[in-house]
Length: 449
Image 1 (cartoon, rainbow, N blue to C red):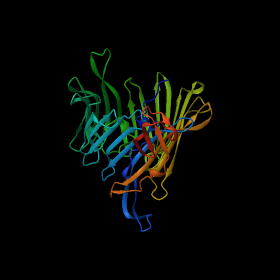
Image 2: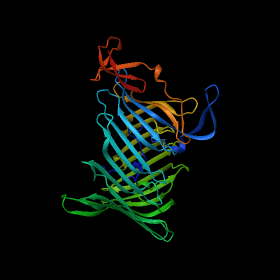
Image 3: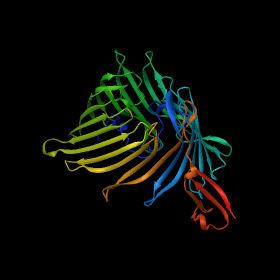
Image 4: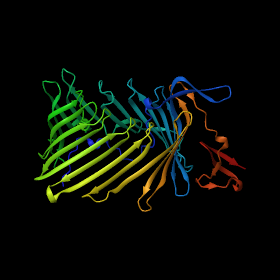
């Protein structure tokens, strides 16, 4: 059966691992500034703060214990953006480290990102650099993305280097977007979006096209999708992609979509609240077979949590095939994933669980920021969840006011001893020699005589 083109609906889904290290959203990470009273305790005052973790320890569950894998140490600017981040291995025999340096433009977007690596964990050398420019109106839309790698004392251009050329009319509405990738020393256009406007100055036709080839030698342009008969709920004329036509800025109520095979889909959308929730219904005929699809997307909170249900039906009468997919995604104010759930079912059969991950967070009782995050996965065989991943946050600083939180007291942490091969040894029975000592977040070398 042929799948619908879903108008960027797939772009809202977030069923992916690896969001355990959040990009701390400034507007959601505001707490009262802390100051110490005479008795040494913290007290909140009216000054707003941006608490950020100075240290993050990443651990994995071995089945018997938590094993520390890597450490992140970060410094921030007054807006809470990461200026320097050092990622280092916590395996004594694998001392590799990486340092990331960020420079920001006036809109808080990364303008230059430089990555340096240290094979010995100490001596950093240039590795990769990214330079970016952004649209003057859509300040988060990249117009120039140049990636370089360090090669024998100089920067050479690398992959994922592209430009996005945006054309606007006299009304300030976008009429064309061209993506050009760097190839053989030039920027070669490979994708294009053309937008036509009616007398009401709203987009009346949107056409996407892309460069392709059959033999890898001769390239030619083909039309991807066309959107016609467009009725808008609202639009700002700032359309840079067909994957953002059901958003609050550009919300289509109905249209006709023609795909590259010439098949037409009728789309109608009902926006069910003012938060971005909607119910979209699509109808088409593929190879003479009636096809219907319904997508219900519900915004749960302001942090990115949502519920998504997709239902499809192909055929009529006794020849109907059905498919249903359910997603549930929950995330807290700090970008930590609390639940990732997905199930599928066909032709009315019981739903089959595809993924079920859960996160639990310990928050600071006074300021509310996370101290520990643990992610667990569902074991389909044992039919129970098991821990897989942990992040410990410490050494918080108030980026907005330059105030450090109470530092971690490593003196009470247990002391671990390793030989130079990374094998843990018993401190009481250690033979004379050089060892690596780890206590809490501190690691150093010692000599036992």
